[in-house]
Structure formats: structure tokens, C-alpha cells
Length: 159
Image (cartoon, rainbow, N blue to C red; front, side, top):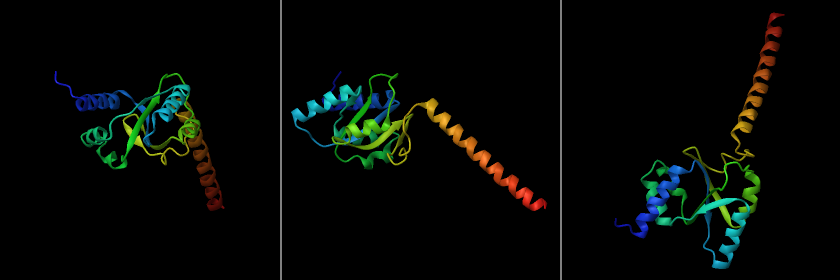
């Protein structure tokens, strides 16, 4: 097998995109070795893994994938960050605050869809059960509110 470094990076990135259902995509600047070691230690404390693909490899791989429209957002060094443990709770705001001084969030991949940070602005955590509970609670409140409005209109018209 003739694997060059670039082919290996492409293979590794494709495997990462297929395997991981949830990860953050951050844009970073080029750091010196001492600063990068501090960042790695911070990621380890937060129980996060990272993958740092080459920029040209990332752009070319995304052009040929289902994420081809997302290709225009990437312009510089990027880093893909995911979790070590599936059982760990994710607090969206705390992770963004801890990584904000080193990286800027570009997007989040969640179940084969890429979301911008603006789309996930009000989301506090990524627990499916908690989010579904909040969704049903909101839906229930809205349905009750619409019922009250329609019941009042019927009373007004019936007089």
C-alpha cells in the first residue's frame, strides 16, 4: 500500500467525520509549543479529545462530502473537539467560556448536520432527554395558551 501523509490525513478525517456524531469545530490560530501544551492540558482537564487536520486536506475533503456548502466557512487552522466519555454531562456555556480565549467556535456537528453557534444560542446542554422534556413542556404551555384564547373568543361571539 502506498500511503503518503496527505492520503493518510484524508482517510483519517473521513473516518472521523463518519464515526463521530457530535463534535465542535473551532478555528484556532497557530500557537507556539509552550502555548499548545497548555491548551492540551486544559482540554485534558475538560475531558475533551481533539483532532487537528491539515487545512487543505479539510477543505478538499469537505468539498467532496455532504458538507460541501460548509466549505466556505473554513479559512485557517481548525480543530475538531469531541468528548472522551459518553457519560459525561456537557455544559455548552462552560466549555465555550473555557475555550473562548484560545479558539473561536465555527460550528457543531450533531447527528450528521452542522449547526452554527447562532442556531444553538439558547441551548444550555445537549442531553436528549432534557431537551425533549423542555420541548414538551413548552409545547404543552403553548397549547394551553391557544386553548384559552380560542375559548375566550367563543364566549365573546356567543353573547
